[in-house]
Image 1: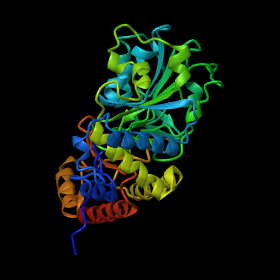
Image 2: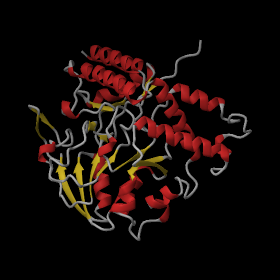
Image 3: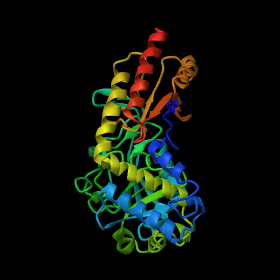
Image 4: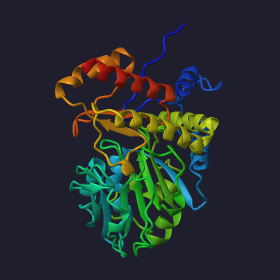
Length: 380
């Protein structure tokens, strides 16, 4: 009997469903009788066009989008979108509002300030008391009642899930209640897209890199309300490269230039797998169970420490810390010996981190929880 593959808790590029990898392996040399690998196909040939169109349709279906929303497949990752968004949306109005919740929102606002009049609508830069507990800086989502969104802003930008800090915005803001009901909502959804049902009817634009919950690196998704770029801001800035102009990409069905063909193919297989599992509703139930199991184990322990407010905890990325820096090396070595990989925290915050995306089975989280208990016992 073949040995089970290790459980990979990497934050991205992240684990893919085994069924997807097996299907891709079976089709590697000859995609469905075409005589070609997908990597060898013309992006304008009928074989790849069928892959591309089905991937877009399945993604649209999984997200529950209406006809007003379109999906683009682009390149450059979410980091490129930090510049592409303002270059496309600030032509008529330079005002852009951002909520600062950590590492990735910091990168977004730093890039945007080159193109517009940036305003912090809310920030988690200071430690404060949240829900009766003291929480360090960037360990929480600022309470929405405190957000100050300019009613004449071109858009409000959020990072839906801070992959490094483990902070997630679980509900979109009610901009009308903030006196900014006409301000388009823009979301970096890189690391929690498809993890649970989300209401995109209130979202003007969402984007992200595919390498968390969708597929391999090299593919970027953009979900946009078409009227945003057809009527509200019908022209990108003159400095915007043509391959990054949303209008041109949309007009050319995401094929203004050669797309990331193989990542799109893998993403399509992931979309098929998700639909077979029951879609985002089923994923949401499983992901809630996985997160509750792992946070429960950490909370009941005096050995492990978490630094994120309970109301802001990410379902996808769980950072935690040990009581002594000398313990990290033996912890990671012991985890590897048990087939638990990629648990080292990001260099910006240190510690440990378990990323438990859709492809991580409940069994993997159960194995990690068992190891946490055993390691704590060994050190007591």
